[in-house]
Each structure stands twice: as C-alpha cells, then as structure tokens.
Length: 483
Image 1 (cartoon, rainbow, N blue to C red):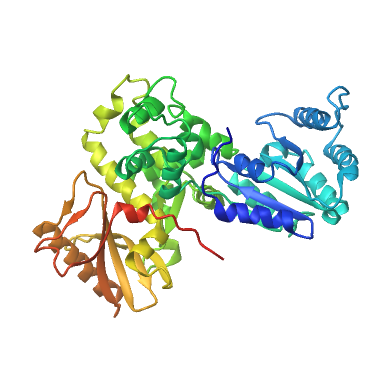
Image 2 (cartoon, rainbow, N blue to C red; image 1 turned 90 degrees about the vertical axis):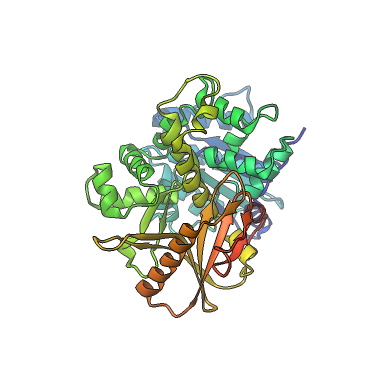
C-alpha cells in the first residue's frame, strides 16, 4: 500500500517545475534530520531518478568512494562490480559515462543525499561536483538534486559557494516541520484520530517532525505515546538529543551549550546573555553558532519592537529539545507512567504555557487569517521593557505591527478549560498596553487579542479589553502561501 503524501504543496511544485523545465536544473533541498527530505524527493521523482547516493556519516574518503562504486554498480550491472575510483573526479567521469546513453527527451534525475557527509575535508568532492555540472550536466536534460541535513553547511558551502558552484543552484527548498494542520492530516492518514487539544499536547512534546510522528500508535493515548517514545528504554526519543546536534554540526559543543542556555531562559536571551550563560567566547564563532542553529530551525530570533538589531532576542523553539532538557534528560527509563506523573508537576504548567506560545508564533499565517488581516502587510515583533528599581518589567511575546494603523498585542494561554480573565490580570494587560504606548510613542490603535487552547469566557473584566479571541481550531487551518 502506497504511503499517503501529506502537505509539502509548494515544495512539490518546485520539484515538478524543475522536471518540466527546458533547461538543466540544480536543486538544493535543505532541512534538519528526520524532516522527510529523502521521502519528498524520492516520492516526487520516483520514476525519473537514474542514480542516487547517500553520504555515510563519519566515513573516510576511501569509504565514500567505495560506496559510490557500489551504488553505480547497482544501476549498471550488479554482476560486474565497478572498480573503486581513486578520487571524485574519476568518480564523476564514471557517472557521466553511465548517464550519456540515457539522455533523451525525458528528463533524468541524479540525487546526492547527505552531501555534507560525502564532501569530507580535503576530499575534493565539491570541486569535482562543480566540474561534473559545468563541463557536462548543465548542458543536458537533467535535474541534479543535492540534499543535506546540516543546513548551515549546505548554505555556506554550496548555496554561497565561491568556486565553480557559484550561482549554479537554480531552485532551493528549505523543508520545515509539519504545521499543526499537516500533523493532524498525517496522523489521520495513519488512522490516528486524536482531538486537536491532544494533538497540540503531542506537538508540544515532539514537534512536527515526520519521523517522530511515525512512531505514534493509535492504540495508545497521547500521554501513553509520549511516555513510550520519551521515557521507555526502547523509545526513539530517549536519546535522540545526543545524536541530533552532532549529526548536523561538526563541532557541536557550543551549539548544545547555547541550546541549554536558552532552555533555562524561555522568554529569550540577547546575545551577550547567551555568551555569559552558555560560557562560550565572544567572537565570530558565536555568530556562526547562532546563525547555524537558526538556519537549522532550532532557535528563532525576534526583533523587539523599537529596539536596535543587536538587541534581538533568541528563543529555543525546537519543541523536542526543550522537552528533552525539561523532562527527559534526568528521567530516562523511569518506567511506565512517567509522563502521566510529570504532567501533574509544577514544571508542566510553565513548560506548557511557554511551548504553546512558541507554537502559536510559528503559525502566524493562521493567526492573521483568524484576525481577518490575511492580506494586510504585517511585521511580527516581541516587546521587552526591562524593569527598574521603581518599575516592573514588561514583556509582550507577540506584537503584530500592521500597515493599516493598528497594532495587535497578543497573549497566548494553554489551559485545561476555557480561560476567564481575572480583575488582576485585566489590570496587568492594561498596564502592559500603557507601557507599550509610552515606550514606543506609537499613535496606532492598540488591540488586545487572546489565543486559548480550550475557549474563552468573556466577562466584565474582558469587556472592552479583549477585542479578538482566537481558538485552537484557527491554528489548525491548512494555509499554503501561493506565489
């Protein structure tokens, strides 16, 4: 039975455009480990791929070349093994010799997976790849797909290549985790029918990573699934954290230190505070680490409203990493019922509140549609006003600065029942609005909106204060940008 393909509408269109093009195309597909890059490419190009190879992790140049010879042997004649080439230039010449007779009206696809592992240090792989493309493939009816999990490496070494690959990539795909809508569709395709509150609970723990979601079982409740995946001795997520960052970054210690620092300060940190808490040196290396983590989708930077660029906040927004550091790391193999117990703890409330906020901020298209401003030019910000001896600090996690003279101030609340505003909280929101206006000097209309997990109960305190309420269902809207 064929596996149902979920989401990825724009990405599939890009790949189909490449195959329908009248020119040779080089397509780069970039995305984190377990995100579904290989599945996307092999599903769309199932009938057109004539050669594919995946790099092997932590394998020497000779080992990679042996693997190349084995893969080429497989498609030419398995009964007559090809001699291992001495270098990548010879390897690509063998590939050209194989491909030449196949060229015709129908476009052919050559797929190099896990490119960073193929291009080992001083291997000459990228130079040979550039030679293959510039001397032959660029003039043929061919699509060359290059793929890698190490997003920063792919961007720096390939997308921004200074040598023979400079400006050769014609199409790029940055594959993201599933949205809430895609997660729901994926689970339903596997006959798993959790309600949306339960799906949100699951998403907060493991995110929208297809490979993680594939391990969810219909016979288990969400709590039981999290318990098994994250806390049993056979669960795939009990030790995923230790593999995740080293598989993406050559020297991952600083990346992990930054992630750990941000996990301690969930509302976000500026660069200088990250350096201090993570105990890393201040220099160009730190800039690279932050860029690489952001390009790979683990952290997100937010520009505080009215602040300078250097004051931007960094937040840990990878759900699994935060969940691991909060709950799994010290509780591995704690036995059945671990998550049911932990979900009643004091730490659960703060974790669930922050993670819900983070997920909402990833679904800005859905929030804008729910507010009726889908087509209004809008810039998202955070707002931070540091406290003093005489005045408490104020933070607003999501500020939507609109081109129609309105600014939405948005609060997110993850509760197990419909949320009702208290008198004290209403006073706090009014204070936040007043501080925001006085600090920013804005003349725009300020409008509070609230996003809740299980509904909102209007009362005398919310009347005239909360102008919009966004439901959980709104976050599950399936929205794809059309360009």
